[in-house]
Amino acid sequence: MNGSTLRRGIVPAAIVLSLSLGLAACSSNSSSSPSSTSAKISCASGSIKASGSTAQKNAITEWTNNYQTACTGATINYQATGSGAGIKDFINNQVAFAGSDSALKPDELTAANKRCSTGPAIDIPMVVGPIAIAYNLAGVDGLTLTPQVLAKIFTGQITTWNDPAITAINSGVTLPSAKISVQHRSDASGTTANFAAYLVANAASTWTYGTAKDWPKGLKSVGVGSAGSDQVAASLKSTPNSIGYIEYSFTQEGNLGVAKIDNGGGAVELTPTNAGNAVAEATVTGTGNDLALKIDYTTKAADAYPIILVTYEITCQKGLSSSDQPLTKSFLTYTASTDGQGILAGLGYAPLPSSIISKVRTAVASIS
Image (cartoon, rainbow, N blue to C red; front, side, top):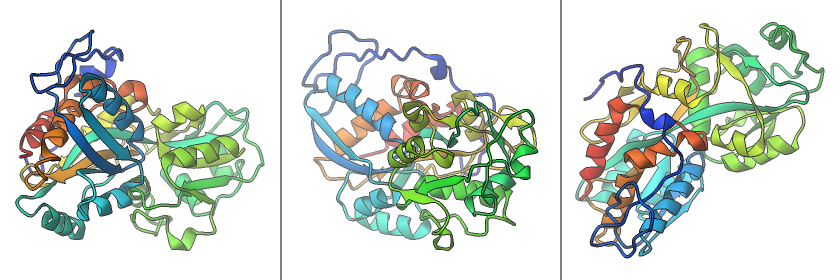
């Protein structure tokens, strides 16, 4: 329903599901049957290419492994090239679907519709990806930051860890006098766009650089850029006294610290449940089966982690080639299933709230 507010308190039970995912025997068009099963995948065979968001890379990798284990006649080749590159690939008919950390903008949607030709391109939310403010700071196990302090760090206005603005919100924490090393994305990134949107919503007087996918040209002298969330995480891990914004799942691989965020209602820890609480307050702004969302970055709820992104799978509702359509639909049907969503919390993501997952399944079912 357009403009409908997603209800709170509906982070699904999938968050606490066992991460041991047994896959069922494929349906009659399957090429194989795994021996231990708890769910069924209606398999399709063939090969598809996809590209885009690095934020969802770990989820796509796990989903692909599970799907291809169940369906040995299928090959899904996802290249984590960044949201901007994925959208370009989709528009240029190079991939069956694109992963993007933000919904298609009007000009992108127009171009994507031309590529699909016989039906609209649609944004299908699939992964709730909390954006972690990750840090590498020896001896500091807990850190709280506010939107204004974040904006000043990432614009180069706060340059040392023991700056009074940081120490004031971290009572009892001993912070070094070391220079802050800012880490950011160097490629077109939906993670950058969503992080910037959070700063615009909460610290517009300090962050005056808009919400583009590219790191602002005016801040090229601030920090170090790396392509992809995985490379930013690697740079954080190897750089003492650093801070950066990355998709939460990459902090687990790098054993990085993750800051709590205080929007004005108290410091909120980044957990799958708290991220799900925030996305449950989003509104659907797309039409029909296009499920573009508007996120409320300004929430002050004590149990809602506010810096989040939703990764979309962008594809044609109608207009995919006869070779791409069956496997694309089958794979996305699995990723939107209870079992597909159930693995996300263990990977550092959050499942979609129940208020929207039914709409997602309807959108996937419309692919023809």
